Image 1 (spheres, rainbow, N blue to C red):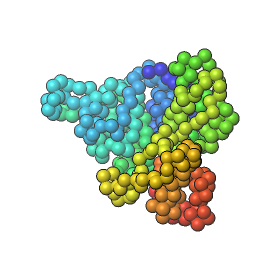
Image 2 (spheres, rainbow, N blue to C red):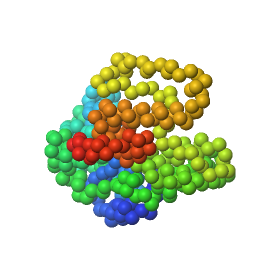
Image 3 (tube, rainbow, N blue to C red):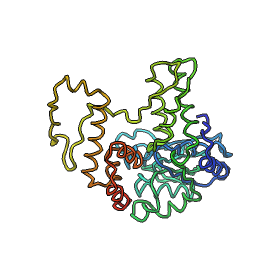
Image 4 (cartoon, one colour):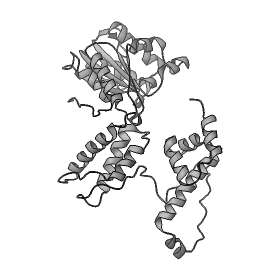
Length: 351
């Protein structure tokens, strides 16, 4: 695959690009840490394509998508007859990555047995296919990624300490988008221009100042991946290709007809039907669409706060919102009382 240059000029982001550039020439394992959507795969690609082995293969595996047995076969290969359906020898991803690099995404989800076999490849440069007896020599640089704090996983017995020692020759921690605010306008314009070209527009007319302010003030729990979705949605929904984009929709599920969330401890089938609206149709129409949406939004926030015992962080998590995003909405609807703010800061659950 061609190398894609990461986009960003925020000092926090430039620092990790520089770190990756210094690490790239060394054929050492590297661990890339970061929240979902921060661009860990782009950093892994930079480590490979700026290295001497850049002409070799760059093989990617998402460890979370395969069961233990399938992951073991996919990584290390298998011999004919190793299990039902294994009619021929299969070269695993490590073999196919020989003289190149392998990117093990979501490595924390791999079983301890698979972790042990990965450690053997790193330590001795050899593996055994499933059902095989003779070792196979490989020369592969391992780049692993996760969104978990692996020392905690080691302490909990879910990750091998010796594998972590080998992987952590150095650790690159990719900053979340909220920690690199300078890059939000740059990335938003980039994704918007791409979407405008896809829609056949002559050019992208830009964002209104209010729309850009909304993008810059959002918490971005989904990071760059979420930003891309939000920007592309805003562009395609724009009514006038010649006018700056003014409307930003962060939550595509937001709707006055959104199904109610069942109370904690109940299943969807146990939930009671929502109460009927006894307001006459004409009166409802006169209240206006925006008022109905605001009332619905306030009701969601209020219910979440009540179910969370006033803890704003728990309420935000239940609604799929960032704490600061929830806080702004709570202030907007007059639900951010002094007592709940204090409770949110003192009763936060341990991570």
